[in-house]
Length: 293
Ligand SMILES: O=C(O)CCC(=O)C(=O)O
Image (cartoon, rainbow, N blue to C red; front, side, top):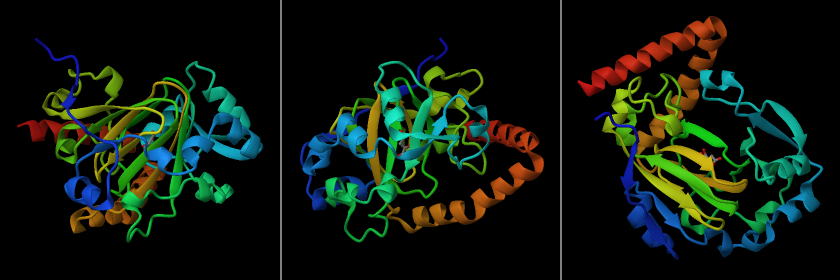
């Protein structure tokens, strides 16, 4: 019988409290994901960051948002906001309990309001010797918002903490990359995880992943190179802090992608437009077919 669902039976470990040493030994160095219960509550933001509080303190800020319905995003890894709006209006939109295609992605709200650092800064699990500890990026969206399947361009480890709402995080370890239809010169996939099409993408039969439910307060550790596809089960607010890859190979991969691959792809997009994308699509399907042999 034809397979219709992705295999998502890998079990993620849950931890309630983790010391830096345990985290490093068990997860950071082994590249294994973990769900850390109550991570948000280790700092004041766990209680303080409610929708009302954000609206009261930052409702007037102008923020950049994306529209998931805009198809051009499929062409490239880099995504610039599609429009601006008041943060307060955006919060109203995502807490309506109805689907919305508007979301905030990798947004540095800390830059606009440095006081946020007093409420939630880089968790101690990834703070030590971390040149990226000051970069906290916010991810917000409405119910049913999907974040396309991708891994992070800098090949960092990501600790994503949820402050409001619930999210489903589907993770695939990097060893399955060759079957995940990665768009060449990009770090996202052609596959729509929600409607996995095994006829067009037969390589998906070889892939195994994790399905993790993240409740408000939980942190998910997504190790370097792990593909993620996130679905907002309700309106949600989360913050990601990151740490560079721990292996020289991972580090180099991130540097090469950002300094060579991404600029090259941008240039080709400018010169060839849709033809460049069509070429990449073809290349992508051929690469997986070859890997399957
Ligand atoms: O949960 C989200 O909105 C996306 C998170 C993400 O893609 C990331 O932290 O790299």
